[in-house]
Image 1 (cartoon, rainbow, N blue to C red):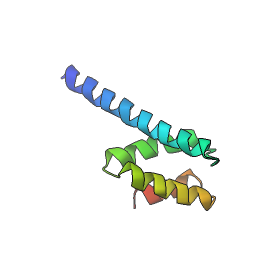
Image 2: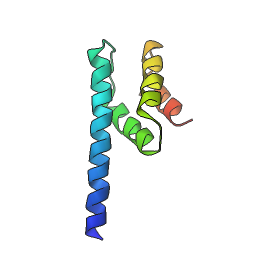
Image 3: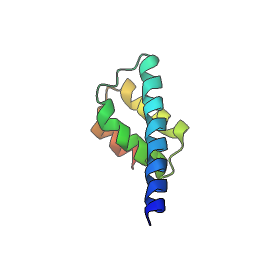
Image 4: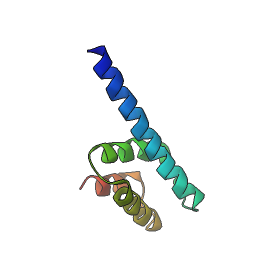
Length: 79
């Protein structure tokens, strides 16, 4: 039903916004997140799959410190 589709779309929008805020926070802390647009849907999907925001942030922070790109970070978010 259409109301169910709207609920799913709204939930996805909220999760994408949370992911965007997390990535923007890392940028404000001085991290270079060059492939933010590529990483954003992966981070949102990881949050939707049950990864906690704290755990996802720790994974991304560690990966960025190591100079890893979106593909490597994706593999860490979805082991």
